[in-house]
Length: 360
Ligand code: SF4
Ligand code: FES
Image (cartoon, rainbow, N blue to C red; front, side, top):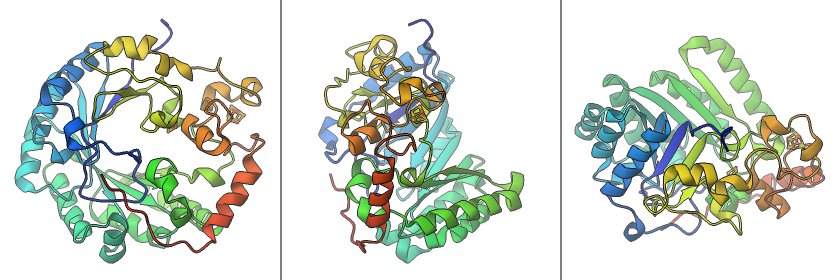
């Protein structure tokens, strides 16, 4: 086990509660209620253990992490332990006083999700009236207070026409980084796939827009681009490789290799506070289930890229191939690749518009 490096980042999912109801939420379909959440002392101890293991970044996430009254205390503790603190938020519950408090606690970076470029559509997608305008005002406060801002634009069939305007919005907000992320089809995204799947033409147009704007904007705005999996030829290196870079802690304290890992049958997730975080990371059965390449089947096991993309996403392999140790079907070498592509194109043209909104 000595070859395994310490995790680079910890995703602290403080809560599944959220005022928004995005139909592509990465949280599980069975959301945890407030009563299942762990207390401040639990998260403080997690931060201590993470820092001792060599974790460098902590992402406070959810659900909506600003619903937690102890957020500033947790940020202060993390930064005192030398961790870089990032807040992943919908921003709709923040105001200047709270942001000042978080900044004073040591918050370095804020990532705000946008559902579109214009209020009517964005508010329909998040099912939260007034959300879009609130996000804009909070984003301005973030940069005014000297924190780094990432605009996270989740794109899909129903908002891809607004992609150029979303890029303009990120520029206007003076964001350091824009993440244009096509929906990942896990959790609620999988549930709403037919309403979200882009057409092939939209995919091609989005690629061209991102390339063109990257060239035009240069260093003014860094644009990260997460491609729509189902139309890709090569799979993404999900989570930087299973059990290689990141650990997720769910609101109830279970430690997961990724946010969707609980969809994989047979995996048992240990809890922080009951088992040492380092023990879970280095020797835990769930973290070792798909770590490295020894677990792979063909075509991955004899592929030159197996230590590059690690066979793609395990949760997607389960969702599409019914087997978490199969080649991710978005890979062109998967026997299921053409079938998945056809299914995606069919869904993108089926005319489903209504969302099933996430609810606790
Ligand atoms: Fe990656 Fe497996 Fe496809 Fe090779 S066959 S490119 S390792 S997913
Ligand atoms: Fe679980 Fe990709 S989301 S491995």
